[in-house]
Length: 156
Image (tube, rainbow, N blue to C red; front, side):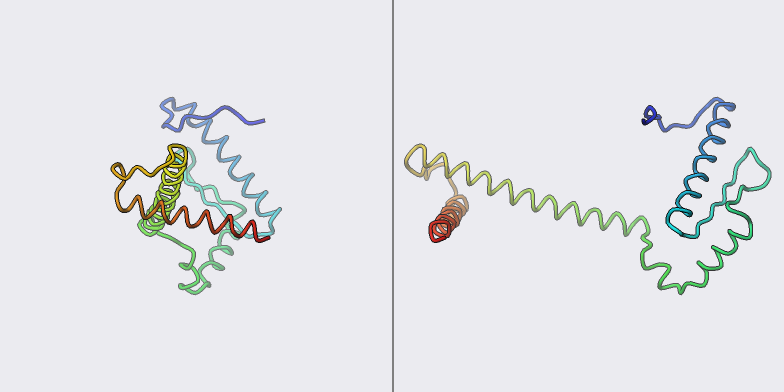
């Protein structure tokens, strides 16, 4: 059972904000403990808060030091291998989106030409005056592909 969707906005009421902070911090540390136990990983958390004088550390100050020491012993090239800064992340997302748009345009073009082919078949002739040379070339290619597919199916 899931809770209701929470509007992510700063909580103006001080006591409600403090209660939410305590509840969510407890949940975060519980999830971190579960992740560490279930997956056998080393993890740590440091939480600074205006409500407490000292930062909350999990699992313990020595546990945090152990995890940080392990992290600091990793060579710099290994540390940064899977890390991505915001600019690199956005560039990757843009490239992926551009590729998706290109694929969708290609699919849409094929569907347009397929509809044009079926329209020409239903009318019984190709209407040259409404079509560009590119349209005619694409239509010829699609017809050729369909004939090859029909030939392949008949041959088997």
